[in-house]
Image (cartoon, rainbow, N blue to C red; front, side):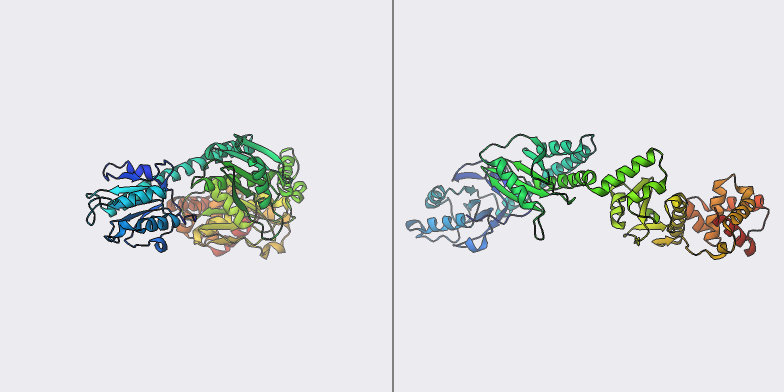
Amino acid sequence: MPDPAVPPTPPVPLAALLAREDLALRQIAGPVDPDTVIHWAHTSEMADPYPYLLGGELLLTAGVHITEAAGSGTYFDDYVSRIVAAGGAALGFGVAPVHDTVPRALVAACDAYELPLIEVPEQTTFSGVARAVWQLMAQARLAELRRVTEAQQSLAAAASRPDPVPSVLRQLAQRVGGRAVLYGPEGVEVAAAGRVPEGPGVRDSLAGLAEVVRPSGPGTPTSATDSAAGTHLAAYALGAGQGFVLGVASPHREPGDHTIASVAAVLLSLLTGEHQSGTGAARSSALVRVLLGAAPEEVAPLLGGERWLVVQARIDAGSVDPVSASALGAALGSPLVDLAGDVVRVLLPADRDPVPPPGWILGVSAPVGPDGWASADAQAGRALARARATRVALVRHGERGGLAELVGAEEAAAHARAVLAPIAGSPALAETLRTWLSLHGSWDRTAVALSVHRNTVRQRIARCATLLGTDLDDPDVRMELWFALRQQ
C-alpha cells in the first residue's frame, strides 16, 4: 500500500466519527481498530476510484456505479481491492437513494480485504459526513496547536534553568513520550533524558541516524527520520557548527512532534554554540574581566575589534521584547545586545554598515575606540532622538570636525563649561536645548524626540533663555550654544 499524501493536519480517528450521534453511522464490515484514522472525506461514484484517490480517505458512495449483475461476478472484489491499493482508509456506503441496503457481496469483499465499511443512513447526507470530518479535524488541529504552544513555553523555561541542556532534553522527552539524546562532536552521548526505547537495535539505530546529519561537507542534510523496531527515530544537526546532534526516539509520531523537536534543536544550538564556540568563550571572558575591574580597552580585543559603533534602536510602533532585540542584533551582525526599556543598544565593529530592518529606527554613533564607548552611547541616543523626530529610519552622528578642529580640545571644553554653566545643574534643560537646536527650533519635533508635551519644551527653552541671559532667536547665539553643547 502506498503511503498516503496526507495534509499537514492531524488525522481524525474513525471511531470519533462513528461516535457522532447526529450522523448515526454504523460499521458493518472490516476490522474494528481504534488506530484507524482518516485524513479527509471524498465522494465518488466511479467504478474504479483508484486514479482519484490520494490515500487516507473515507470514500463515500451511494452505489450508483453498481450494476444489477455486479453481485454474481468479481465486481465487488475488484472495486474494494482498488480502494485498498490506493490507500483508502474506509468506505462509506449510503443506503439511499439507489439502494435500500448495503449489498452483501460488498460486505463480504470489505471483510476479505480488511477495509472498514460504514453504513450511512438515509437521513445523513454525504456533505454532513464531510462537514463532521472537517469539524473533528479542526478540533484536533486546535488541540495540536495548543500542545505545541505549551511545549514551546516549557522548553523556553527549561532553557533558562541553571542546568539548561539536561532540562531541555527532559522536557522534550516528556513532550514526545520517548527519549531525547544530545550527541557530541565525536558521536558519544553527552546527555540524555526519557525512557530507553524498547526493541532490539533502537539505540544503535538512533546513533547511526545522528551520523547521517552530522556536518561532513556540502549536501549534508540537517534532519533525518527513520524507524526501528516500531519506534520512530529523528535526528537534527544543531546549528552552532560544532558537530552536536539531537536524537529523538518515540513510539508514536504526532503531527506537532517535528515542530516541538525543532524548537528544542534551536535552543540546544544556542546553548551549545554559546559555550563551545571561541567567540562565545571570548565574550564571556570579556564580561568577567570588566566585572573584575579591567578597563574597556583591555577587553576590547577579546570582542574582535579596535574601532566600534554604538547603535541605539527602537521599534517604530509597539514595544520591544528580548526576542525582537536578539533578532535585531542578528540582523546587524552582532551578539552584543542590550535591551533597556524600549531602547535596544548594539555594539558593532566599525567596519559594519548598519542597515535598519523594516519597522526599526536607528541612531548610530561615530566610530570610537573602547575608551569612547560611553560618549558614543550618548551620540547614538541623540541620533536616535533625531531620527524619531524627523521620521527617518537611520541617523548617524556627524563625523565632520568642523569648527571644533580649529580650537584645542581643552580650550573648547573650557569654553563650553563657561557658556553652559548656568544650566549645568539641570541635565533635562541641557538635553532639551541640544535637541531643540538640532531640530532647528521645532517645538513639535523636539517634543516627539524627548517624549514630552510641546508645552514642556516651550517652558524648558524659556527657562534656558532666562538662565543663560541670552536671546535664543539670535542665530549667532544658537551657533555658539550648539558648539558648546557638542563638546559635552
